[in-house]
Length: 291
Ligand code: NAD
Image (cartoon, rainbow, N blue to C red; front, side, top):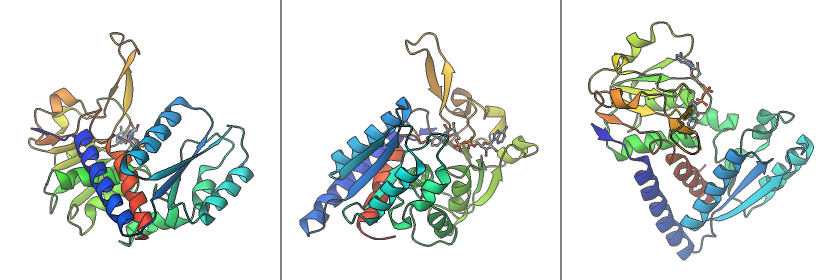
């Protein structure tokens, strides 16, 4: 069994981005610039945004953090989005989700100019993904593709079972794995909460991508010997032995499944760390005007 080290690959990617930024600046390009809109004071969102800003510094990007109180109106946010759309110095930006309930996330996402939508959530970018056109692939699926590529995991002609059909992970993942691309060319089965006899599907899978949100859901009896296991889940489970009172586990029952897997991502340290590297890659793509 080979453990897929997302932390290591994420750092590798960030070093590569840093080198490319230096080269681009040396030939006269401006510093790539990522902005983030953060609404309210949710601790998890603050942590995510500050690690994104820090990562920008590490690779030589400029970053701007725009903060609003949780009472901000849709109108004020839309005005800021318009301003960022028209600011030529900003290559791409994200709106940290979730937003307070009185704000429509979809309305905000649709207001972002698709060329600056480095999270890849705008319907135009999702459409471009489906049509195989240049686009921003959203961070988690992009990260998974990079892991499969960097570990040279064969996908051509394989049967890939994706569990979960969310807009941000499962659905785009199923599309990407079926594409006629180096990492792709799989026969894909997309499973979800209405799938009957899930185990019959997973037992036939060469690659399983679990994005369910249920701790330790995928067990060894559901997995074929030698399967590749990508665990997207991040779930908190109580652990009184730790001072924080909880630990993070994936959707895969790691100890037992790792005994059958050929490759497996751990949680934490697998898919999660790739998210930031993917966002930086998308920002570089934006700065180079490739979308
Ligand atoms: P979601 O809640 O939007 O979707 C979950 C999906 O699981 C649904 O499509 C549902 O149909 C399916 N599902 C639920 N119960 C099922 C069952 N019994 N059998 C088969 N399918 C079932 O979740 P999401 O946003 O896609 O996130 C999934 C998990 O991935 C969560 O734990 C989340 O925290 C994690 N996540 C991690 C990252 C990362 O960077 N590692 C990024 C995004 C999400």
